[in-house]
Amino acid sequence: MGYHFSYSCAPHLAMLILALGNTGSFCLSNTAIVRWERPEIENRGSVVTVGLGMPTLLELPISALERGLLTYSLSRFPRISAIAHECFLQCVYSKQNRTFIRKNFRTVLNRFSFFESPSRKIIGSIWLLMLYFPLFFYLVVVRPLYKWKTGHNSGSHSVKIQRL
Image (cartoon, rainbow, N blue to C red; front, side):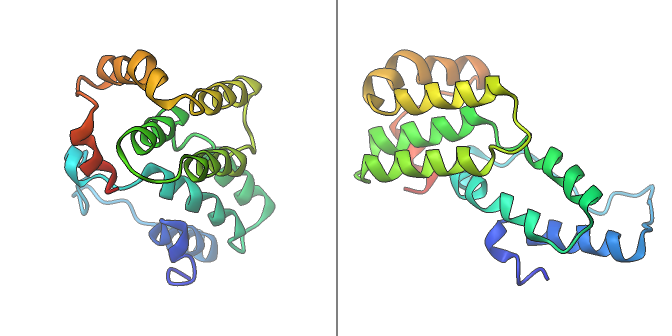
């Protein structure tokens, strides 16, 4: 099933969810078997790609209760502001078609429209409208907001981040 759901950007979660569903048990360990660290800025993957793939985990053959819990968990990731930041970087610093970038952003919003509050949909719509004037809103809103939230500068060096 991991290979079957590789397009979801989370085949490891597909295997884990199905394994827990089949046996209904798991083992806790006092020793760490995996250590996660926030990736270096230059080594991060695309949040848009993850946003396009993660909702496909809802196609797993699981019960309705498990699907509801998974829906709730998936609705919290990725953050709309992270997806919008990546889309603004693509619009401002790459030669990609801006219509295609807006379409990807809209697709991610639509795929994550389940279990959302109305405020998240409104915020997503505002980000989408700002993408029609990407340079202006990037300089006035996105770049200062990113600097305030993360402490990192957002700019042309960030193109490497998004692997454009």
